[in-house]
Length: 469
Image 1: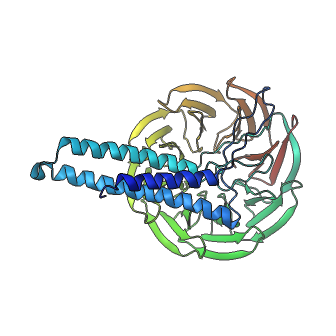
Image 2 (image 1 turned 60 degrees about the vertical axis):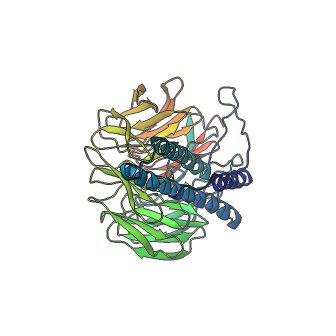
Image 3 (image 1 turned 120 degrees about the horizontal axis):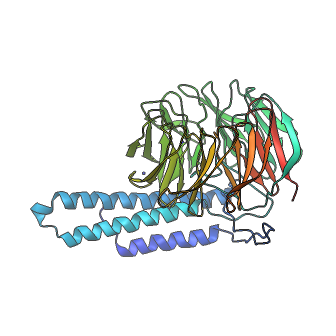
């Protein structure tokens, strides 16, 4: 869909100090209280509402610092490689090499921490912004507002069916449809704020960044449209954009295409900055973290590329196609494969941490919360695994195949399983509510205080409200 002469200690300290003060000025700290089980709601993380020029500038400063940290790592790694290569000739001491390795380890940790700060920001209760597929560019997002089951209809909008997941700002839901239109729906009423014809099915989730929506169609067109419905530009790519959802990082929009390429486009003009060829079509979405973009391909390979130039950093071969979009958290990259396995890799170098074998294909995108990985499979089970070793904590059966990503709200996990929606208490490890619909649901859910949003594949888009709100 997500990257050295050694810098002197004084320069490193300056950079870390700069990062520290930028983050302090950037993050608004608020504790949101609620009534889930009589306890205070957990502190919530959410992608910055990057609509104002000031917010955008601050975010991109943080993004640039991540890339600067990444460059320092590359310089350290280059120096280590040279030191090990010339050890015999120059009598480079083992102590010097050991010191370089320790510095590289510290630098990797610094990159991971800096990357996490890019998507950690607090927001005001009730004013949700959901910017990309799975919320943020690292595709690992959960919410802290109460949406307690059971749920009841708030409103329903009828169109040509939906496979794309929605995004939203404080006013509208934005979602593409199978009827060749892209819609903006009022969050409170479900009425159409605007729509634009795009001459193609939209099966992938839009990205909302700086007041602009980026999305592709199965006819191969990629659009940039303002939140007021004005088209800024359109770029024709080499084949269909099918299921792969764009991610935005700094000035670049990344999108996978069925012509086997991952594209990096200038977000202001649509011009191709670089593209990377895989050996198969790309239905997975790009994931961005640690100054890298991670992308899975139907050639069964997960790739890690430099965000600026598309240079290959590492790749990992699985046993079958990769449709699942990876989630990245604290230096761990997790994704599923059609070989029925869930993989956990070191985000920095692609080495395997653990592999878990399910009983069916895994195309669902995993979600990570409190060191637990949650995901669904075509075997009709939802799983919870320990992130440290991939050990099974629990699994629960559902009525249908699980193709979409779970949505976790405090201790409640919502997920679509065929035509069924389930709500699982992840602490009690049981299904506490479910509801069956007439049509299959493949979209992932998004939510704000008391309401979740999703669409079915036949005709309808729903806002479901918590009765307990």
